[in-house]
Image (cartoon, rainbow, N blue to C red; front, side):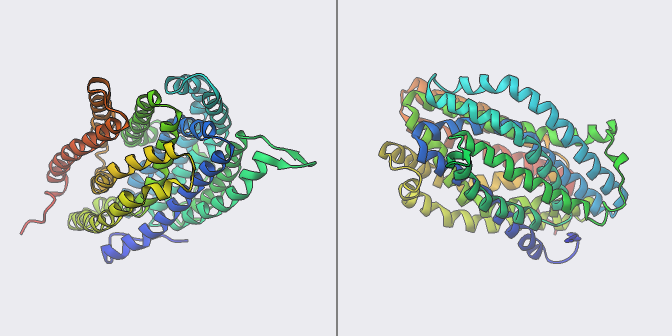
Length: 454
């Protein structure tokens, strides 16, 4: 079982070992979602719009999983950097326990609040009905998502991003088979569920991912001596995990709520605008995958070295991430600008949907380098156990910024969908300036600055 000491050896080698499998895992995760979009498109544009809205509502709850995974990567990574195996084991077991408790609470909240979230960003009709049905089915997949994310954070803290890659590859191929099976059924054998079959395919495949990743965690050297009693809730451990998780989770929730704000602004332009935004986001995610893999790798590398008080290597990791990320994002920008319409055409033949999606992707091409730096800053601040600042950056950029600038351009100046896209661009750009200022300040407090003293 892969278990790396990230406090030794070339930084570039650790990035390669962690980032490539992580990016591949995210590639198959995104392709997994693309399969869902494709099959929804085979049903109707209303199905695609319902998928986009239902998934957005579900992602708000999944934010707890993202936050727990980041907390595990930071806290277990710090313990590994200190060479404290007992602390690493205890933190990991409490993290899994925390994820189980969070899952039970979120399922109940989802049943109650889900329809209200969906109603807020949709009009009565076919696509709202599709979104509600899809969302309720997805609630059954919450244990698979949350426990898998928590377990993956533990593995990443040990320098292992290969396990999740393999799990997502298997889930992708399973989804290709399960989607048509559950949508259309087998004549004379089982009846199809129609659109809700997409959600059932997610439940089955994601449960498989959870089992595979948990098995890898239980085989870690520091976990093998654990016993079931260590899963019993410990208030002190829960408080530490919650404190590390909450800012990241809240930041993710703000991000997804901003998605609702965007969809709310778009609904006035018709269902085709919402469908276009959902498809364009999938295309954006595919091109961001190398960046996400790289910036995700920064978290365990920086966390272990911060725990070991090896601050020069923390700085080196951040600057390496930025330099490589600059090359990646500059390369991706022309693809978005010139190839957006072609990429959209893979998912729909509706010209109105293609045109709206292309306009979003062209604005997005200028923002890729800023996204890269913002993602790496989030990983850096989490590694330094200062995640609360990621929350404030997100609250401004994805909360106030998007709502205010979209309202200004669309509500006040009467712009069309371009006002939504430009509002996003202004929020991202000003949020990036804010994030750079905060990062410089925190780095000075924790690791004596972003630059090594000469």
